[in-house]
Image (cartoon, rainbow, N blue to C red):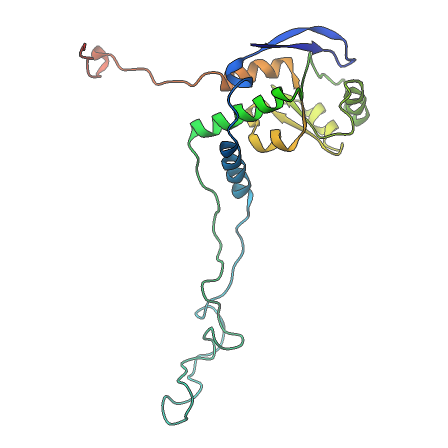
Length: 228
């Protein structure tokens, strides 16, 4: 188990916290990271592209010339794909690019991304990030005191904090995310993580263990287990 120092916003040591090995010391599998990032980016695609086929293009209701006797190839409509202004063949149509991944794969990818940042020494745990008012300058001062200014930093918090979220959104390269929305893409696209102490516990609760359905007992309507 990895123990990491907990610091204050003034970069003074305020204790330590144990990072759960099931979350921050998991095996990093690049193929899982790629699959999850690809799924997230595909889900964000609007998919509103559209083209018209020969049935949707206006005009072309009459046959351009008679079927036989002209010496030219037979044509049924000037809106066929081979004509200028005709419809498209197999053109893009509105669709969703979203595709599913097993929940276990997504959880394993997130654990791998967090473990990668932990191995790089890119995780800083802060005791709390309570702002008395909406102040972007205060967030910039905190990042500077923690030697995190000038880079891509993802601030991870346990609960919604409107003052912090709105104060940090104007800082370039700085993002704020709640533990409930923590994902692989945001972890990988930020080189450093600033995690509150409460968020570490919330991450452990979310990712350390996989809930399993309880087996029904025989008196609850389930089948009785036969001893082997």
